[in-house]
Amino acid sequence: MTEPLRDDAPTAPLDPSLRRARGAVTAAYVAQGLGYAVIVTSLPALQQRQDIRDAAIVSILVLGVAVAAALGSVIANAVAVRWGSRTALALGLIIQAVALPVIAVPAPFAVFAGAFGVFGVGLGCVDAAAAMQGVAVQRAYGRHLLGSFFAAATAAAIVGALLVSAVALTATAAGIALMCAAAIALGAAVIGIRFLLREVPIDEALPPAERAKLPRAGIWIFGLVILAVFIADSAVSTWSTQYLQLDLETLAWIAPLGYAAYQAVVLVTRLVTDRLIPAIGRPRLVAIAAVTSAIGCAVVALVPFPVAAIIGFALAGVSAGVLIPVTFGAAGELSPEHSDQVIARVNLFNYAGAILGAVVVGLLADVTGYGPAFLIPAVALAAILLAVRWFRSPSQAARAASPGAQTTGTGLSR
Image (cartoon, rainbow, N blue to C red):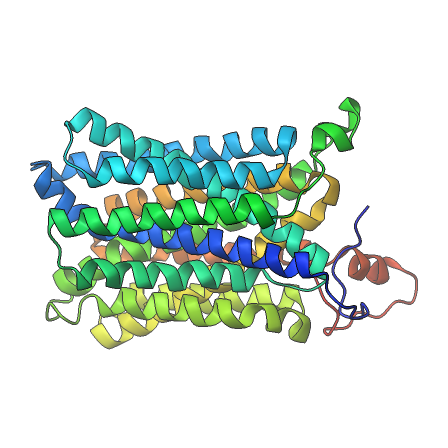
């Protein structure tokens, strides 16, 4: 069995193949972040091209992508069990590379909507399989890397949004941006096939009786943490601009600054997360991130001023920046021999949280206004404090359970 990550592990020269595998995983995260951002920011132009006049149809398309992504995560699990996460990740990227050009060109609505669904399958497949490979590479390195992988996706998403903005928001320009995203996804798939880690599939590594022995309690705990984070992420992504512009009546150019501040904090915190884990320990980092983000959402809910709202949205970004990579890393350590299966299942909570954050907050906003509705993600994030003890590493937990053992805050925690 692979040893869990430790702060005191000796530093050994890295095999060049590991560096290439790290680069391949980073490329997959870049393709994922860029492709999704281009899709989302191109929606107004695509809506106009397809002559979709009912906003509810767009909402249904977006919901369909989330449902299809959950299916993609299930597919990633099935493929990884049989052929390894390397194959699952390459498959997801290829599916995206096929779907994006179909979305890019004029087509009947049924074809257009079907392509959105296919893209969602690829999205979920890459979400799950990229985390599987990320955990495998992190484990092989012997140090934390997931923060940098997720940071690459965030940076690529910003570039994707800027790309759409730079070429002007027309259907033709959106099509060009989508074609670029498809080419990048295909390129990442080719790189992945060549350089990703070749894990031994679970079907080959474990006897049939052992394959189903999953840490179900841990899956639920970490899954609910992911659920809470994505409730907040979806709420901010969907409603922050609406709140600033409609409820607080800010100028049109100020309204998007709440979401911009949120994404900026997500990127910065993901860049430093890998260094913070060994510095302060995973349980403490999780607690700080959960409290900070809960306070941010509470500020949005209770202090109805534009500056306060923008600051609150920025603080809320700490949750997505820190807790997503930390939680997937912790999930991967629950049972290293089943890490692919565990990650695929935890990833499913992602989409449930995204739907709840958009739908429930939106429905409550119809009654209370957008501001007070942000108490929902505030409470969800605060509840993460109940799961902090699950983020201890196996070695740390063993030391804590030993007679006379003293707990320290400097050990690398799960």
